[in-house]
Length: 350
Image 1 (tube, rainbow, N blue to C red):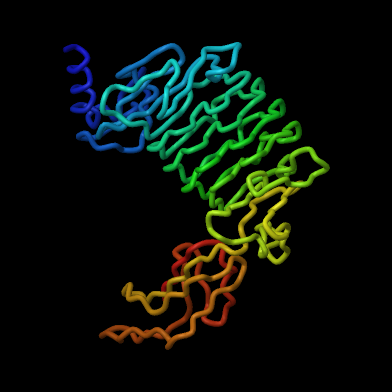
Image 2: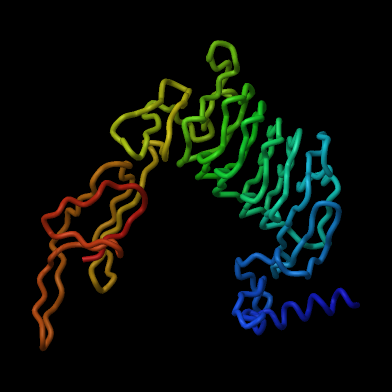
């Protein structure tokens, strides 16, 4: 009864407690819901966990959705040197959800450490939309195989703060993450010691990789020769395409840095890497929001071109209007200016 009352009060009062005065200073209290609706604000700092165990706590985000917050020194189910944990949709080890809840976010408290073998630590989390493990010290991890495999709802992940210099196995790390479009492996993410890459991105359709020069291709140690499609580093075979058009670095989009046959071998790069074949959409609108033209399948790195009639606007009692250029909402370009090369979907308004 006390637990239910606590949960009810958390929901009923969360809006009212958004701002609290502490010692004369205004601070933002951690609010997880407003009238039971998730706000996207983490609940991890609040003392209202609805479930907990050794190395983890669960917080209610509303709508039967929850956030799992990890803490302490943790290892995988088959590891040693820390509390064993596996936050998974299948066979969770040392972890359980309240009945009816689903995980949509995984995060970690400051000071959290992962050590040893962390294989499949977060695999098979079908409802997880956000993973924020930027607080975690991973310098003691040796195995990250299948770590995020089968997280079907995950669209992006940033591991740039991770020290992975001791990791030897990243096989299947993002395997079957079919919605995963962007991965940040820059910063301190270090693949120098990795020898096992098999299926690291298998069945992914990654469009953007942010990397440093410690990023290297999926070679199996056999003189750098991929042994199968499953071991090719970015073999998005599920889309039925080869990498003939390859990948480019956003800093130099005219030069293909990979793309021979079925394999996209990339190493020694720094910056944002983008699949050259990924199409983008350019939408052209009049200032009254009327759509004038839509250009689909525009290739990254090419300048867009408006090809229809000059936009017009009826005069009023005070002004006569003449078309003078385009705006993307941030920058304005004159009618004779060359528009910037496409780097994503964009809308231009007259």
